[in-house]
Length: 338
Picture (cartoon, rainbow, N blue to C red):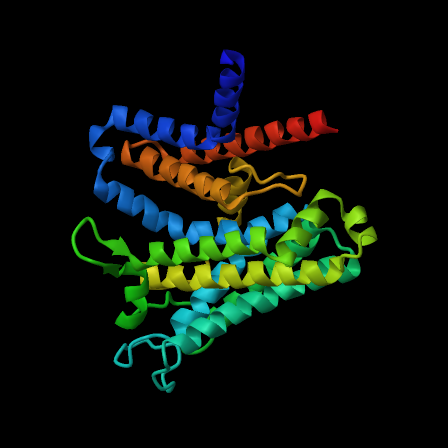
């Protein structure tokens, strides 16, 4: 009886090790500076995690199929620039579109999300129809999207000036909250929670989710079982692109501006969060709760090390080590199963 109880405890510990790591990280930083552990800090961590979580959830769709998506960050940047360019105050001196009438808030937001969806769909088409490896396909898209964004950003009369003067109804999405004071709940956090719930439903309760895991587990077996792999991959890449587009809109709203360099290297943080959270680099494995934990760990690491005055370059070194170690452990587990 004691032995079986011990096995259950060991199993529970191993299944929730990522949350243990998060708690240990919080305690370690708090031990260095006790002021770190506060409601204000927790709120800031959640706000910074929100857009990163949405990007990570999008990229998880691709990693679970056995692929990767290097274009995520640049799609975020494009969506941020497009939404910001159409949601400036009428009285702002340096408007991107001086003669554009004030649009309904939802219109530029939907346009930006659809742009992300279309780029994702292009990725899916290239991967599924031409059998181009996802790494190469999304690398090409990453470069092309950045070029397109830079051309758009350099249009007259903007001429590559950072886009500012955003409407208050737009920035309120990123900075507003329900309630007041330090215990208020930011809108952007609620949006991220809602998106995480929807993604959980797709992962666990839909045919598309089941097909996604099947493709990542064994693409040949998925073909044989009658799954339309090409169509499913296009859907998955399109959903991922739409999530990147949403994240770009929220980043512009949160920061109150945008430039063509927004989103640079965001895909690296998203991939890192996924592999830390247990999304297998070999495909077929991944859970939303693990992705949430992975994003929180990286955000606490970045925010906490900055808070206690550690050189930002050390953050990059630690992040790189974490990615390598997480993938190494994942591959060892995969090899053991084989």
